[in-house]
Image 1 (cartoon, rainbow, N blue to C red):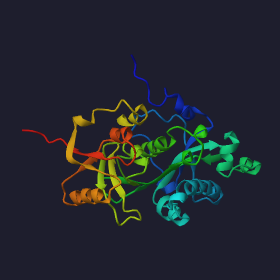
Image 2 (image 1 turned 90 degrees about the vertical axis):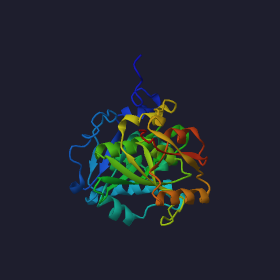
Image 3 (image 1 turned 90 degrees about the horizontal axis):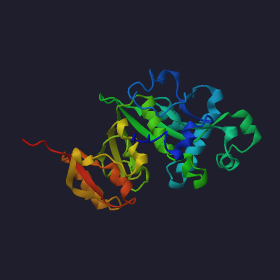
Image 4 (image 1 turned 180 degrees about the horizontal axis):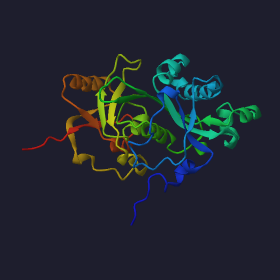
Length: 302
């Protein structure tokens, strides 16, 4: 029996085949990726050519406004909305924004109203409305690391019946694929549902477990070596690969809601006891905030 495709055979991801929904790349010409998708050429998820927009052009400011409106609606309640100058100085100039956009006229009226494109004028003037955003920035690392700076989607503000299943995960996947990213770092909070998402792009190494230099000390910093072969596991849920073939328990758990646990984990990292990893499959099997097993690579015997 032929195995089902995690994307193309999933009816909940039918929106990816919709001609009214396309990936977009909001990037200044100097930062445009040469030969996008060539590193991870085995991945066949993205069949629509992306919409390319230049943020340095004045006429593209409305698209930027829509990206920022979406980001503010998603993160404003948590106090983590991105200032406009940070968007330009720290995202647009050094990196780029990717995601998915819908043809404005095709959106349900309720969705248009939530996204502030509910007028006939908006439909006439704005062909595309962003549904998600993923900001990725190159670093000075000699390993060619990129930083995943921001990720959000319209799902966080839409009622369930109007949501686009998996659009957050697929948006980050598109950005990593498009930019030929080998190594990706990022930040998230231990009790955020996004931990489940970020832990499925490659083996999830914890770089900081407690981060007081951040506005939220309970932030973790992670790194993944991008592995597109495992991306489908996020959607298969119960068909996770054998993580235990390469990793073994390190002898302790991390308790995401306990500061003493996070600090203890951080001290182990600073003492160079790692590297330590979290099993992505376990993040899906457990409730947000429940203890997670910490792993290390299996030692080679002999």
